[in-house]
Image (cartoon, rainbow, N blue to C red):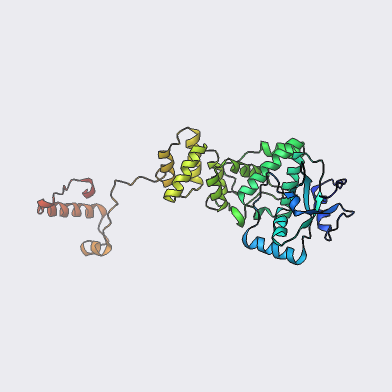
Length: 344
């Protein structure tokens, strides 16, 4: 294990990342505070919110590491009684192991509080990855961790208050039912140079943490969009589980109209399985079939066969009524009543 030394004095995450990017050539210990650590001494962050690379993405990173090594140092903190906990660089560590490396260049951050460690984990990912590349579940969990850490560390208090006091509107136009989720992008009001999001959208994503895992997975897969997912998050867990079961068994889709109805039913304590099924199937919003027969229209070629363009409507109706009365008087077996409304 490398010997301990003073942590680099950094005033922001930006400076920490700049230090990592400038330290391209790893040494045992450099003036910038970069040291080589054994991979066997590293453990993942205990509450890592992001999914690690798999498949082709991991293969490409492994190939890069085999050709060039780990160019950007990882960030760690000492872990008692020994070893180091990774704060930033989990994918680089996995790729280094797969590439057969023994050690990786690292920046050791000493004397961090738990809140400060969480902020590094989340903020470095926000700097290194686009929000559009994150799954909704990743973003929701990361935002929750960041918010709780900021509360604990008493940082960005004005931002926290703004987020917590933000209302989630029923419909603001921009974030309507069609808001996409998943890897292909998510709509936000405003994204600053530090990947900050609007308080309203942050609050929407925070609501995803209240979904049962099965429904959250459907959000990640794009089967349920952001706004309907927010409504579903207000349902009780057992109600959400019923929704999931019916979706799985019947293939029902959830749109904004259905999710709003379900949320309303839950809030009024009228959200049993029968009600949920009626909403998801569309039975609740389906218009009842009209018992009134469709109006009958006489075809033009028949009309012109018996009437002239000068014929008045009242005269035509009278003639048709007499003709029908005569017809049904001669065909009693058909049991038609000439006085019924449809023949008036």
